[in-house]
Image (cartoon, rainbow, N blue to C red; front, side, top):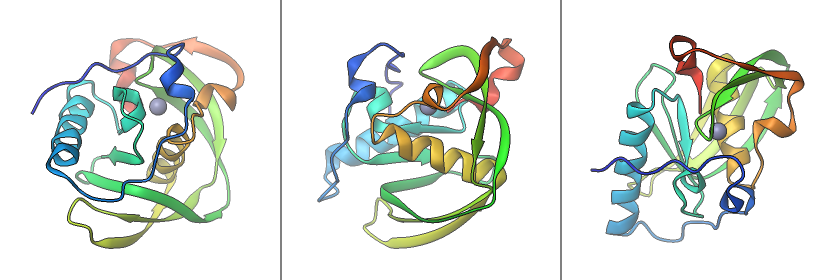
Length: 160
Ligand code: ZN
């Protein structure tokens, strides 16, 4: 496993649309392992493949309940709303208020090509929305209400 370089806002790759994964190759498995390692190293709660420069529809999330690997994720239900702080490993040291659904259902495949449907609420719902948007070239900055603010290291742990 290896820590990958996280692309920062301004890098054009973050604005591109990622491609569906058709087959889980050894290279994809290495990518997933590296994404998990990179997310933990940077204290993020999620990471999307385009953030490490790979335009494939893969995200990893861990909101404290263990890692979830989502390949070709698709949000099929959204309910309610929540407004709260959000950050992004591609926009280090910043946070801003974003309104998201309070509950989502997402369908995805894991690295063993098994299909799942997962219900997420609160932080997990927020992370799922944030990461899935990365796959479509969107950043939370597009949705921020009001000003971005600076955050200190200690507060930095909910970045994705
Ligand atoms: Zn992000």
